[in-house]
Image (cartoon, rainbow, N blue to C red):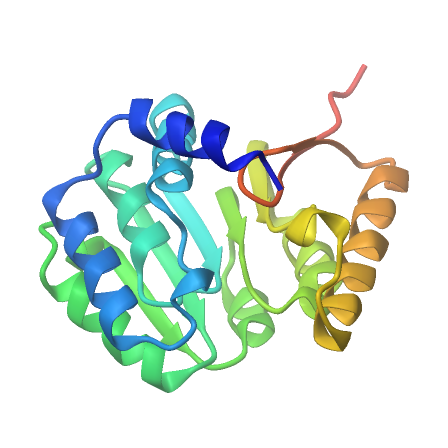
Length: 213
């Protein structure tokens, strides 16, 4: 979506990822077919910056993949912080679990394998930070599930909200793009929240509860 030279420059000028995150990225590229789904180093640093600023103690992630984004957040969260992360694919969940076991913050990450909505339903909250990066058709359902459990100063971060630059490459892309459009419009109309859509990679939205007068 961003002109490649600008994307490359931004990545080159962003602080280097940790050795563990670099290994996670390399393993994912080498052994996982859909490696493009992984959060990159620029996005990982962006998430880490949000965690550093907000100092969340209770983080929920929907969509673990191979664990890069969870570990990026874990490296920046307080020592008493905890991440619950949900992954529906048992194969990528196994890879993520191996990566978590290699991290000194691994004990602070609770990996749940299976559909995310039942996990959200059983967790009491409040969530200080929620990161959603899963199947696009589920975005609206995830949003509705987490908003009532969001802390007053909590933040929802949603990935891929400009899905591929809004230019579908095939029928599946078209379906995902329509789902993302519907989600963005739903959040835009929701009077409970405020959102901003950022042009980081193929779109990251930041959503917060609306300030009370």
